[in-house]
Length: 349
Image 1 (spheres, rainbow, N blue to C red):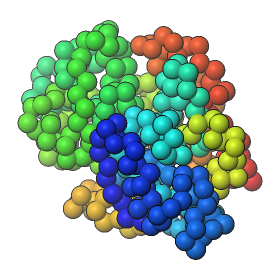
Image 2: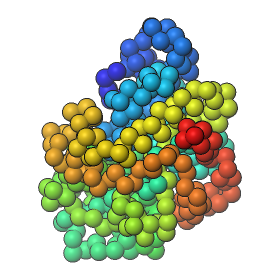
Image 3: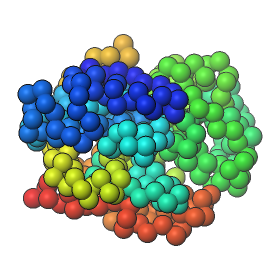
């Protein structure tokens, strides 16, 4: 399967399944069914990821590159979107079986009456950095200075949007005190900073390193490295996860277990290999023409990944506390329905 990019999902949901089939190299199976092109025993699963090239979502593609989907008996089609919000929309519409995104989406969706749960937690810090344009270096020195700024995010309702809002609120502002500007990630975000379309951005690697190396922006809030992230957010913040509708999980337990087995194996492989060895497994176009920079960024982000896929104790409560600072309805969410460790516990046996 070769990676392809799909944009404007909200205007083209009906074409998503067809595109996913093309990615998988099959033409007739529906999401959740078994493939009929030589791997009949393997259930097919369509997963949309909010940015496959982002290092924070690396395990999804790495599992494929390592051959773990095939090894553990599942036929996975990966579809890319620029923001986790779009992956969420596709999953709820039944166009995909799961979403690769941040755990915080499960809480936000619960306030809207949508029951989804993270079946594996791949990282326990956001892996994001709030960066500010160098032209504002003398003006923006703390989060209290974020009010009135145009802050770049991947998409409205995305996790970068939520983290931007939290930092503005933490600085004494309100959600309405800044302008969230959807600019995606990578080259589009870099251009937005360079051209003055945005004043700041919440972004991940390798985009953060590109901004820094090109002297375009500086770090205001580090939510990438564990100690700094815990200081900024008051504790752990589960990020990269595979979340699915609760009803899908309950009716496809064997398929979900195969997926989780593949991802736990991937996380364990990552924990025993060097950044250079990991980078060598990734598609060359993920380097954006600079493999050295990619390895540099990878070295900084590897500690964010869990080694067993389990949701760490106390982390859901901290995510709930952060989101409820500007989304009061989140306080009432039953956290037990937003994640499960059952599949990772079995995978780690």
